[in-house]
Length: 450
Image (cartoon, rainbow, N blue to C red; front, side):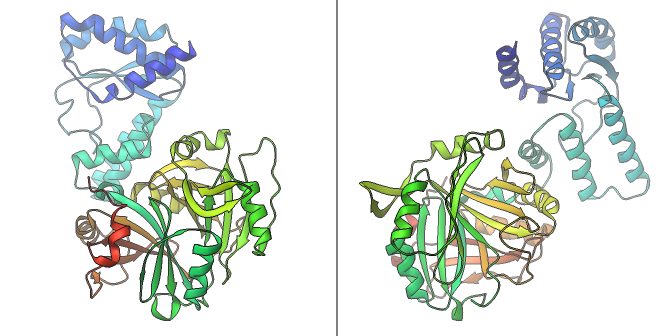
């Protein structure tokens, strides 16, 4: 039964968006769909399922048969002649038609409440774009769609977009130093990261093909090296013992020692770079917290460093930029509904989002993290985009967050183009596009346009 349910889920979760007119020739097919969705509802895979649309006359014949089919799985059926209109589907998708609601427990009450709240907003002339999207999200969640699926459906029917719609090519994090040459030497020589290019004020390094690190001369950057370093960079690796022993031999300062635990979701240790930034060397293991996360990590090809230790070339297969907040739940909504990131691990007080296959953002509740929230922070979080102009136009029109300046920053030599905004916790979010330029030769090899 379990394997059958999983196969039905894979087959039918996408089919639940397809509304077709039922005719006498396909009644048996529609009954099969009702039975299959009823099994999914009974298994807890879906809270609410919808049948195909039918004319009232067709539904009159179909309803008792469907009711009987659903009852075999302990599922209730209700006729709906006025399906709620939201941004999830085209407005006329059920015009003049009926559908069946398949549910258990109080799900029908929750559906009716969404309709009631929508009507109240309309009566009060408060049904603006934000409320329209929120009603659509509530309906989508009741249908058991993921946030990313809901985003996709809303984008198909409205002008709504997220950052994810503009082709994120890599994550990037800017750290700020008083002594840039010393910091560059540490990351290239001690940690063995590849130096992709240098500008007069920065060194750009590769952790993986889709996760970069920029070291900035604080005297020429947007932040001071004296601001709180409210960030931690997790370097993901399955070579923790080797990295730990190697860094101890190199006399790198360790903040938290390596103490592996059997059965836990992750192991790791924390080192400190030359100017105080925290580097978390971390391994995520098979665990219920990591069931969506580990498959991404295990499919990533390790990126080798120049470090050889104990007969092994040491490597990384991903990076997480940990950021610290007073209100993690608000940032969760921002990350999912404005940025369009995929939640891949939820530890309660931390949320890990996939931005690229090897570049991740981690939200941390400052009450339990390695840092406390601070207004100022010596870090800029960056996303390299293929369609930077499209995202800039969207942000200027829809204003999903505050901009630092209402203009692009274009580097005089034409090496890159960027603009900067703020997330809900005040972190600088920079959006970049690098151009073909002799200084960017190695960097541009990473960005394959789609």
